[in-house]
Length: 594
Image (cartoon, rainbow, N blue to C red):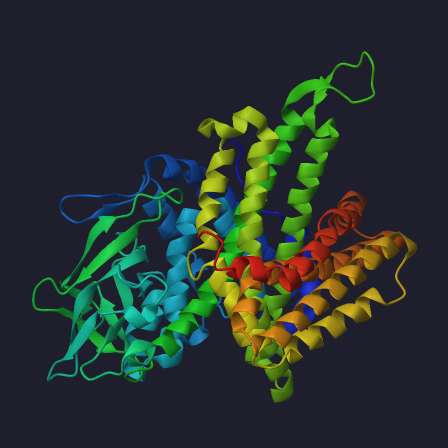
């Protein structure tokens, strides 16, 4: 069984192309020097490879379990790994130093998160949810709530969750029924049941801070009547020490296809006199606050897709270089060769690798834009960066995760029959990847968000601005070896612009026509922005090769990756554009037999 090796060369290239030097020059990021960042990446690579990766297989086999006493037990080694993670400050890498965090840029934290997710996706979900809860509390909590909770959550002493949906609601949060009743002392009593609560119960941390959506008396119907409540597992005393157990419990654990070591809980609030909670922010603004967590979580789930795809690629690549089978095509009388010598295996591996490269680069430029939107001294630059981030979030989440499933499936295929056998480990990556297209909003929800909120709302202005940026690169004076890539890229941009125009033209007449092609449009958009970033990476690699700088083999491979992507992935864009523009009638035909 191979262990995870952090792709540091790829990550450093991603940091460079995303503009690390510009990001660390932003106010508040001055401590993130090149030397500091390099040291952090090296140490994170060591930690994830030596500590978290060996637990990945154990976690898949053993999984989380719920005892009769209501305690959730994780596989051996997880408790020690979490303590090492938290005690060495990794939990607070991107958090405000005022609460004990390191204050690192999103761009840098993104690379560290990918390492943790690639080494052990199930483990990574606990700090991921805590990070979202920290962000929501930091923006919406009272000063007293921040003082009580944030430093303890940033340190990893306490963990966090978000509790949105319920059995009858699914993705329709307007159907949430959990209720909150006020108490004279300013606290609230909560009653209800929540499902799909990641790390809703565990003993990695000494307390769990649940952020729960519920309805107050007289609240409006639908999502406008939801409020956000802080409901800790143990009620803290005035000094912050966990006290009495709150009236909440894990009713059951879901039996899942993958991420077995991540406990997905059904949570009951208020079996007795009610779970004690405190209003976070203002009444009836809960869905607004929860989307703070949701957007951060959606980006992070996109990173999960990238990470598990990288792990699947690493496993397949090693196997293809070790597995001896058959002779090389066209070589009469030749001996047995590693299967990496067979053309179709090479095609599969390059498809895996080029798409992982593309997804990582797209996530990196999005993370850098998040830093700019938060810290740039020019309000116009902040606003422009925020528009780009909002446009890209559904792409990072939706396209990256759908592509990750395809990559993990290819990883099984590279292994042949052995890939279908659990002992090789290839199947776990496919099982783990499958949830990423579903939680924190399915791919369809991401696509509807892209179309309805990001493209139609501003009449395509943000998309048009991005298209102009991409066209400028494609039309620039590129080196001869990259001109075929640029030609394919221009064709893909044309396809994206045509599909976007169709969506804008049909939305007003019948939005169903636009939404029927929303997922193909999202996948088209992802392919195009992936090609944009790979062309940038190939150009940078060509320049370094011309100067004789860097690792020549690595840089040449980046150029090959862009060439392959152009010929095998960007060529699919025309077909996706036709699906967007011409495929809606069949979807909506009432005689389809559905």
